[in-house]
Image (cartoon, rainbow, N blue to C red):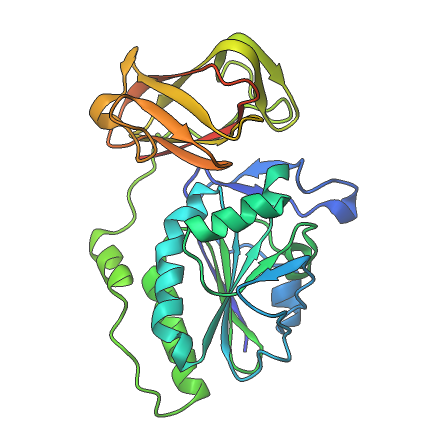
Length: 341
């Protein structure tokens, strides 16, 4: 069977160039993806047709799995990153498919390939797995060996294999949930005739009614580490040290000022040595108020004790705004800002 690819990537999403064989570190070469609605070659996974080996550091929620062990099962391999907003938006659907179809022969395998160095640390990824409520098998691909074996180049990407271990179809980015679920259902029935399927998941049904929101004109993801920061994207006040992947507050009070155009803003941040941080969120020079994100309290302060994506702004009027973050916790690290409509 010839596999096929569907692409649906909001324009601000990123893909990693799988370039170690070309003399590059894939963690240092990032290209913006523009959704063109065209097929992109999927490298080793599509060329071979069979499921590549899982070459990972550790398994969570499962004993180690192999392609041979998974024969007879329909397998959905989901390349994810626990701080990636694009994957986070897809996670309710992946969890729903595991919930509804695991007993019928579907195995979901989440392959976590970390974008940032802190994502390799067990305490961070294990916390991320718990916070996201993931109960299906997770393979920790810290060295990107499985990423390269699949020829993968973006988060999130989903590869669907039939019961013979043959790649049937794969999807890059957000959306296409009805199509993915329809393919899962088709393969389950093909693997075991007479399988009685449940109704389509309520999550996919609801999305089919609302559809994908428009990302036209939304500010692109904004990295603030020295390696990928674009000149003029942010203004800094205070004693910030610029490292390869992040900005780190050294002491005193620091501010980050970011003009943007969107209704939603998130930031990947990490607390300092104290293990917790408090960041005041200002929108257009005022406390964020009713436009605050889920991780911001009524007082306009985001308090967190984890390394991950922090939701700062939600439901702001779509248009031009200025975000100001104010912090005084030494060691606070800020990595990237992402946006939504």
